[in-house]
Amino acid sequence: MALTFNTAYLADDHEIVAKGVAELLIKVIPNISVEISKNGEDLIRKVLSEKPDLVILDVEMPVRDGLEALKVLRGRGYRFPILMLSMVEEQSVIQKAMDLGANGYLHKDCSENELKEALEMIAEDQFYLSKEAKSAMLGLKKNVRSEGRDNAYGITKRESEVLQLICEGMTSKEIGERLFISARTVESHKENLMQKLDVNSSSKLVAKALKQRII
Image 1 (cartoon, helix red, strand yellow):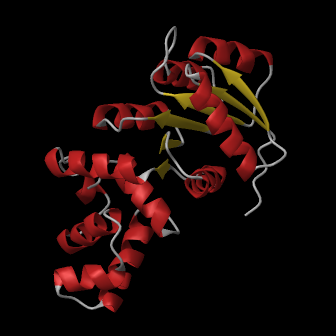
Image 2 (image 1 turned 90 degrees about the vertical axis):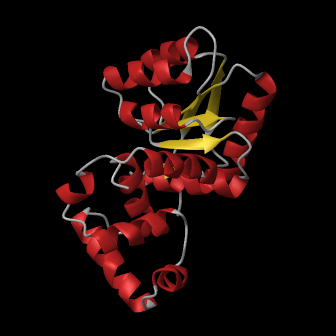
């Protein structure tokens, strides 16, 4: 799909990393204009002066870190997509970013294809989690499950099992083999889950399940 982001503000206190991410961004969107800030405070000032189409924030920065900048920007009512960058996937940090209104969480060592996928998803108002972040969150869900959240959506025990395995990246065939059911039955459960969670794709299903702490 054609990405329509024309301007992006990027905040990272490491110049080499920031330039690398900017170059990667330009490869994905050749005509995009990228402004680099060394901290969240500087980026916020730029946003107040002129609103961008996209913001990318390093989680850990001096003066004002990415999560603080995210909180300020959302608190001021800005609704443009905000993508978080980090070298470490900590469950509590990822969850806080999701709760504060981030549109995605990406590892700094991402490839061009990963960045493109993330941008395509957030452009369609989907939430993007890198494989590393998704694995970290699945570990959290296994240990700290929100009581009754799945029942609030009317999700059955079997659907919950299927959803867990979908979030782990398994195919319908693999899920069927794990649960001793047919791939067609898995697809039927998936369709029911998408209907109950009011989403229309597997990626949206995974994103909502993680964000809403359903699994």
